[in-house]
Length: 106
View (cartoon, rainbow, N blue to C red):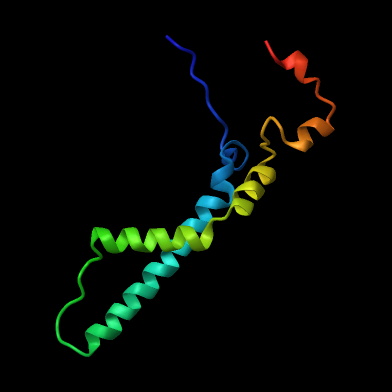
């Protein structure tokens, strides 16, 4: 049996860099776009009779696509990794710590 490894609570912001900014920003924009879309739908429906319909798959895809374009940029992804202290191998901050990369290569 493998030993059980438990990650303490509150570590997501350090272990999952995209959760720190990117996903939260995307969810927020998705909510904003969905509310705007549904508000427009209500306004159109108020002129006619009938109940509101649930969003269909294509409408949800369109909303998510617009939200992604509005919320996520390369700069935001980079900032998310920097915020959590997760850097790529060639990132200047790694080299600023005087790491001997030859010792890391097996």
